[in-house]
Length: 137
Image 1 (cartoon, rainbow, N blue to C red):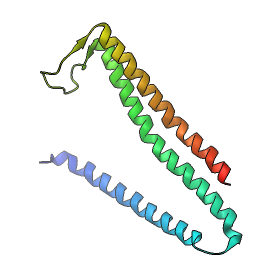
Image 2: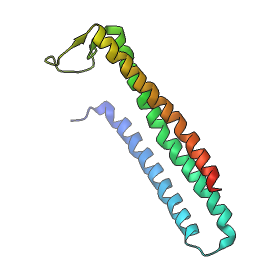
Image 3: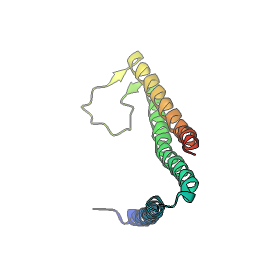
Image 4: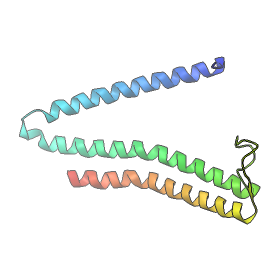
């Protein structure tokens, strides 16, 4: 059962989802109405819109990657700080095998490195979309 304190958060998430879903449907219908026209004078406009859509989609895909990368780096820092994998307080079962010492340090640095790569990929994705959007135009 959900706690009563989670209901406002769920309501805000639902409203946000509905607004962005409605906007996505509207812009998709506008795009499709322009693509299906046989008017070649609007070809430059269509190219520009495709480039902008590509940029927007890559930006929206990059934001969660940056957030996930930051969280993975946080987990890596917790591993390095506690010198144990899994770090204390992360919600693992008591029977889970624990790594300590140098092996945990190695795992911590590896997790930090993977999180950093994920953050870089999330930041570079809009740049790649911008470059490819420029090629379309």
